[in-house]
Length: 367
Image 1 (cartoon, one colour):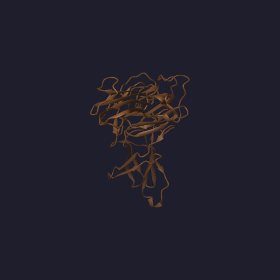
Image 2 (cartoon, rainbow, N blue to C red):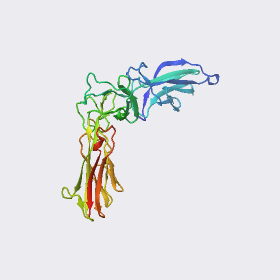
Image 3 (cartoon, rainbow, N blue to C red):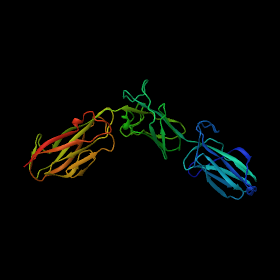
């Protein structure tokens, strides 16, 4: 394999070839060639292979020790012109690590008015998979379930590679640098009405699902990148969602108490939860009436104090049924009558099947 400072050897596929050169360059020669990703590891350029752009080509004059560095273009080809006749060593380098599929070290002779050809085959890792509509939501791909085209899939390695599923629902990310790790991050299809179906839990290996995506984080496991192809399928589920408020409670106060005295200090909590068949984005706002001053936020939901409100949202989607709390530590500063504490659940990624339960109020007094 080659790394950032190592080089693979060239293969001279055409030997010393005749090439047209300007008269002024008749006393010099050159070297040209192609660097390609040899996806089938055949050692020869074939159908399905691809150019390896920006590969560094180093040419060493074996007599003088002088070195020349060029880079392959977008089509994988390179040229090193105007070389004095003599013997040279040609090698290809890369900022990433790839396996070589062509023979090793080759020394070539450059002749006046001639161009030698040196081609290089490299092989990297590959991640492929299929995106599909998991109609029954069991995380398993079954007969009769439709594939999903036009889904963008990001494969996060030391480089970011993006692929799009074709008409058969299949994507492939090729030519990935070896030795590192890959995390598959498929597109979240809320705009098409889909969430992720049941699948793996990102931090725990071994779940027996066909869908290899954590429905909460949207990530796959971390996979070691080798030349062995990886299969990472992505299951989606047509989403149903109902984001609900649940209760408002006053911690440190007797149950049912709704009248407080000036100077009282207590914590107000509101709870919200997602219902449906896929994890949902979950946030809420808890607002207290004038006469109460918020001295600090409370509860498990990440939140900030904004005037008479505490506003929060979880950074990751929450699984259905997870009851979550947002709260405010308050002090009663002056009397008021029949004012509301209001809890509002924020809109999620999908249409809410029952908007009537999005807001909850509790009327309180202060004397």
